[in-house]
Image (cartoon, rainbow, N blue to C red; front, side, top):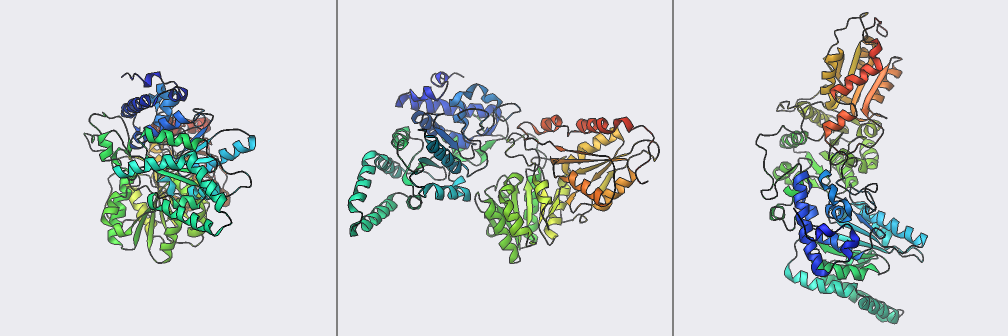
Length: 638
């Protein structure tokens, strides 16, 4: 497909040369390109369709990349990528070696700050604004943040800092609130377009400051200040931002370039912290996405834009997320003390049905992971049984609360850690590599790593029955297709299970025992057939089954640990610590995620590249112990 205007855009400099009618045409072509592109690759859709005009206006008004634009979260930056010279690589989006689905500084000079988790943009842009002041550089810093991301506490910390006086250096930063959770009625659009132009213009600001200087130190000053504040409060919802020290402008229609461009031009040269409220609509311009922006938030794979998302011909395997969602509803029906908590990930964490069936016990606390954890602690103090459904990487943001508010008080909170391990297309920012290491080192915390869907349900029931904090980690996507039993059967606390026994007899060759944590049990079993190795499904990272570890150490010549988490400080480290405490010395091989950030790509391909598929496991074991696998060698302490 050819695009008469978009085809001529090599970078933002070309956007800045366009007339207003040409910008409108560019918006139509860019929206169509994004729709067709995501149809070929999958990826985030609704949010990107909603930011087309805003992206064009920003690159038209600001001198990027000299001026810095920081996109919060960054899943809405596909139009930005297209306009900044990456259009030809959009077919590689979210694929191994391809474009990231989020901004990355090492991908383009136009990506001023790498993002993917929310509520960071204002802090980063504020830092850039002050750096420019210190270096004597004339540049603008702009933070684009959504109404969802603005609910994060870090965003308000940054707003509080930006609006505070800093000696003679006010923060020359522009915060743009991309509010896509409300519609614009015609009166609001017309009125606020006029108000935005008036309030962002030099005449208004000069009159405002002039009146202040005349009235200051007179009894009328406080009256005038209050009158201005309350008058603006009647027509614009900006009082809270004014109180934080920002000049508030808006709300304006984020799809109206005739409103966006002149307002941004007025704000571009204004000093001090500015706040522009822009209202957009998710999925704008694509009827199917406009009607259901949640469903069309992201496409997991290719689709035909003319037909929209289609259900697969054959039902897919049950995902771990679905196992959790069903267990949550079942347990809530059985125990009225259960309260479900999510930090703005209802769909992603499988809690849609739970909200429908148990609305009074469902809490979406917005993007506020710290609050989610401490809120759960408060519930637990009063005898409730909170279950926090949270992605592995998002729990990192509530780590202090996990330690001080939950674990220190030994409160019975269940953490359902979705997206543990490799996540695929979302890349390093969402890869759950560190939860084993950072959870297992906390006193009172327990951590279970189930190997399949059925064991996941049992693990959740086990965690719920335990009188203390427990995390259950499970990966994104489906498992092996294991049938999931009903009921609330539990696992023996702190006990693993041997799933395969080596046939090598003592004195007839080197005997290997593989200790698998989580879903990598299955490739380990395949590798073990070729190696004739013993395999244990360890299940519990903490408390570790020390008796099983000692038994395997005494009856085998070498141990291999396998986990879909970082090797440093992970489950393999726990096994090594156990051996040392027991006075057992023997060769060990620890397999897991390497000490690097795991890039985006197909999960199976990534596991293969880092040697965690069956072939890779076998190869690593043979490389480390192969010279002795067929030699006569007595077992350690046997």
